[in-house]
Length: 321
Image (cartoon, rainbow, N blue to C red; front, side, top):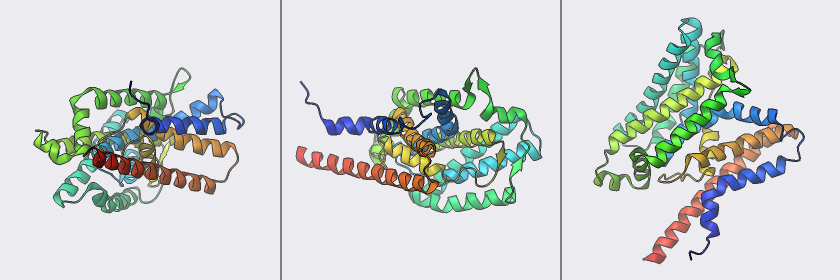
């Protein structure tokens, strides 16, 4: 009989364990467990979960993108220009903004391969470019007056359930199946585990990088669309900061910064940790600055656990040799 290993169990279910602990802590806060508050948490953070699904594909394949929030920013103001100023239909606006997200994400990949730099370093530069472009395009003003059909993407309900929640769970299921039940998912893990070995195994690494970038870009753009539609306005400050939530949630979900492992359901739990922490502290009347401190501590914990797991695996490999 295989001996139970608490370390492996905690690493596998870390996000759900931490999530349960936070829920227990805030369960004593008035109205925390009300149906309205739970729906509110999910609706407010659906865009962050969707964005995190896209970033998770990148991180599982061994890439880290810091420009995510600024891609969202540029997508948001572009949606405003298309739908409000040019008065294009909501469907056309969504298609064009999704295309823009795919283009910007693939551009990050193209530049990183061209300059022979990892995506992390490349996006340190492109995040500034996208931020500047967003302010130039929007002229640093809020864009209001979206059509009702566009705002419905973020504000409509099916029964008593907000549409963003439904979109979020549908995409979570699709991404989970794509990652765990298809060859594409196996290739994603292979790239994150060892790109050179994946190439020797016959995987077209360059092509896969572009496909993953395109998928991530589409999900990031969709998250910007949902956030913009929910707010009913677009500004260059719409989006930046989401990359922090996404990366922290993904790390808490058990995805290593080096890639090669992780589950989408755990990523979902990781993002919920950040969301519930913010909501619970607000209900408890704690100041926003305390929330920043708490989020920073959680980020350090997530990184520390990832480093611990990496060192542990290296020790095990040396012992096996």
